[in-house]
Length: 283
Image (cartoon, rainbow, N blue to C red; front, side, top):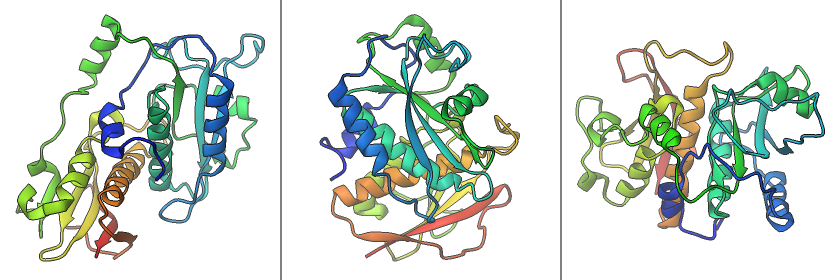
């Protein structure tokens, strides 16, 4: 098991925290995080994102880790990088969410940031070569027990409590028939945790089609029309697919559902702005 607590409980407990105590991470906690980052596996598609734990130090005036005022008090960040030539956005989201839930398991606050960060300053802090780029980061640290009014307003504006329902996300055999939880049977829980997955601007761009008569689930990226990327080359909606895939897999494994990811090279079953990503082939 990756986590000490149930992955379902961690998914439900995870929340976007924007206000942090300036108290530094305890050495033991920091050591656990560094060890976990160092042991990060390859992604589903074989790419190898790298993840770093970096400090915001007042002594270094040359580097200002900027989040445009949305994050306050955070002294530590997890920064992920990928190759410019072989970006592997889906793998990045899959592995970064694995880290986020690990941090949640340590009772630390996090917040996915893909659009509201100064990538240049974080790249400078890592001395990052031009061959690497930063799709997203998260602050990590201790949080106050009560949310401020400012945080509540931001969360409301981001639609944190508003999620698409099953009829919009999950389908039975084809896109014209919605999937009932009774038909999904044991896979209803992994799918519900897909529904709970965080996504950029809460757009939830994943769609899943269950193969008729089989425990096979085909994942598609249904792009949001008019969605603006934070930077030209950063595809956050593919990152979102990776997050959803990790939720599905970790919960399936937790409840003893055997299966694996396969690229079945299926056709696009949606009208437009959609892309087949991968399939979960259950036993």
